[in-house]
Image 1: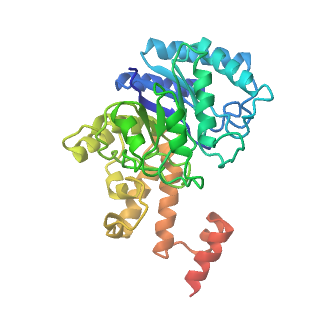
Image 2: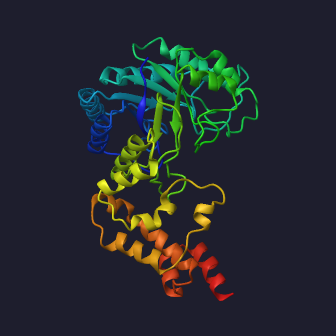
Image 3: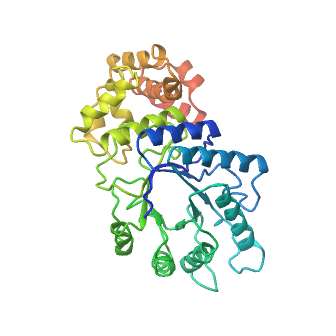
Length: 370
């Protein structure tokens, strides 16, 4: 079986260049990862306008990218996301358009294909259930290709609501058992690979599931970024990370993942990676704000002391640290400094009006006047 451990370009709000993608490939190879999954939401021909053909120039670049990846022993996975408006009555040419598009991507050198039904509205059909239709489309398509065709179902996480109560069961009952399923676990941003669904766990245990990890993603919270070690997932295969689209940040995260996932001393190994990237020691003073996604009250954050020492550390990182990585992290460090200054009531009215959006101005100035 082809194991997939690597990088997903599957985020909103960023679209990498081919040279940036090759840089990711180079690092994946050096870290002994295996795969790169091309599925960017901002590529209009991937999702929003999926029926449109890729241009000859794009296909040439993609073929060159596949050739480069092959030279580095990295598998290229590429997806098409037709779920927004695919015609499941098959009365038009949608199936032919989709099949032909995937065939061209296969001919360019992709190692596997993916159909994505993520982030679309639930739909109800008179002909068959939605889950059955999605699975049947993938099964039918898979017969046309020499390489694997896998799938992201519409219900790709336990937390996604399914008013029909049948989508996932119908989908899993029909989908070809050789197809790998992408799933994010109990939540969309999850530190837990196992699901409440027995059939999902069965596929995970039998290497029929690829865990799509959004732990480091930040397209849903663009003022935050996460640079700590990953949780102990206790999984070694079919594990793909959807990251940020910031090239130097993503390379750092890949190094952190590689260096800490099997570590016996995670904190020590994480620090070694941080210092090897020439990140100033002052970062340790603000690290908790960049450690991981926090979705509820945390003693680790509650116990952080807001004082001039933390402001001084941020000033060092903002004004005295110069590198491609520091440039990408600048807005996150700057926003954090201003947020702390507002909390400490050390950002004056003029600066608040100058730097904050109008709704936040109203909140912050009202609080300062009360």
